[in-house]
Image (cartoon, rainbow, N blue to C red; front, side):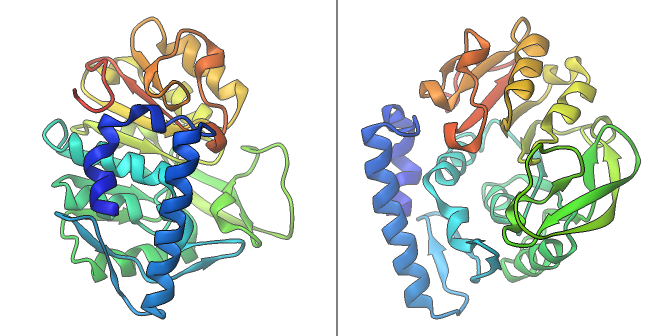
Length: 282
């Protein structure tokens, strides 16, 4: 099933809008497949087979979420994007790398990858997964990407560590937390020579994008989760006049207003590019 999705998703863009009937049907079928895979693996390092690509991601709990959630349909859509654009890109940054699924998949597509994950527990699992998959072109950094080189307070959501975030990045926090200090790096200091940036920064993307030099898009593209209306407004005001904003909410058509931009993971991702007006290079 994964090989079929990887190959055919570009030809089925009407199935990319979250909540649509085609999306829901694919989502349910994929969820059943992934659950069956991990049930059959019984905790072993059984590879997920995408045809030309295989990756091993042992089961790992992140509170209410776990490794299985890293292979939902939205993630496979992005994996398909990496695969079909492997001739477009050679060097990528993975901001909010979690335990490495995107970084490892990009490595399999031939990219050199620098990945950034501030959570120390996720980072340890990330480095194990990089080693397990023999990824020689992935360099992990236990640091948060932001608008400065320094330190920040980092909130770990113990019931769901996929929602960990820089303090102040989210308005509402639920459940028990742990507050730690993490190093930060300025986004503009890590993008030289990079042609693709993936961001999943749990509310901190507005800070990153406000800091990012606009002329960086002369040579790089970005795919990201947008987590608030404020972030959508920042993106639209800063980039709509000089970049293409292609929205999963519109099956990857051009966003013509702020309302066209996803404002949470429940609405999908956004692709920003000055160079390309197509998500899949078709």
